[in-house]
Image (tube, rainbow, N blue to C red; front, side, top):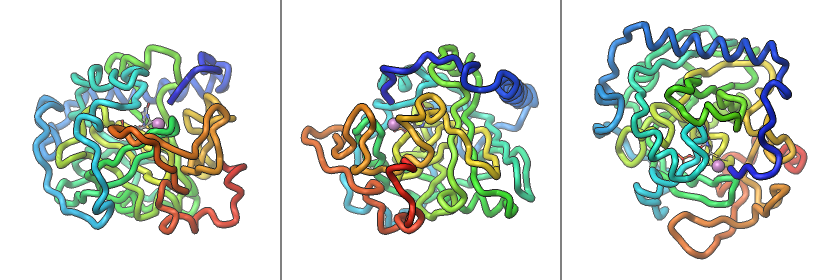
Length: 317
Ligand SMILES: Nc1nc2c(c(=O)[nH]1)N[C@H]1C(S)=C(S)[C@@H](COP(=O)(O)O)O[C@H]1N2
Ligand SMILES: [Mo]
């Protein structure tokens, strides 16, 4: 993301103070509870340092993205947006190096029959993983091709048994400024929040990833668990998720909250709808020189277009 013009809005000016404080307290508490509960170490997905050695995972190949030219490991793990670890593209690789992601629990909440706090390795078993090669198109008009390892979010949602009141899914990143130094600056109203409509969340392309290039996700890519929604701008693909909540109302995602004229809820890749400060018609594939045309829904229109038929995509950007 580029933050030039508006920023530095205090979160207290946007969110009613009371909500804001409640949210903070809740997340601080849960981080504290997890850290002090003496949870069993994660074996399947991480070594016991919490990161670093990246044991190879078991996974099956899938049909997605065959024939695409993959970006390199060093592009994918060295050029990142993860503002919790700094705003420069090379900051996350440096600052997330010592980020401990084991143990890690994910809280499933809201309108569902099986809420609870789950170890990440109980939610996603490594023998369930598949490789999905997806294009990732950042709102800043660059892109990459990434071999993710994950499971469809749908699989996880079905286990939670959402009720008919669940119309949207809200995702929240860890809030812990001691471990995520970027959260000491008021760039966004931390923690980072994202959301999907239920049909988008249930779409077979929507992935929860725990790995990349056959290895456990490095910190800078959103370890230990991150969302991947390939037809939407990259900011929808929230990293280091600690909470998944089934809600009735459309969640207010972090970038929309910061700059609602620039970033919407849907954030579908759309070359026809420019960002107010730059064109979205073309993109630069990281590692290449010439720009390429951006495709509607990032090239996934056949699969996902139907979910938006009849919607004015200029209005619902
Ligand atoms: N929590 C969190 N998630 C985030 C971000 C962030 O700053 N914080 N950046 C987003 C943006 S703008 C992009 S383009 C992608 C980048 O993912 P990658 O670094 O794995 O390529 O992560 C998204 N998820
Ligand atoms: Mo992005």
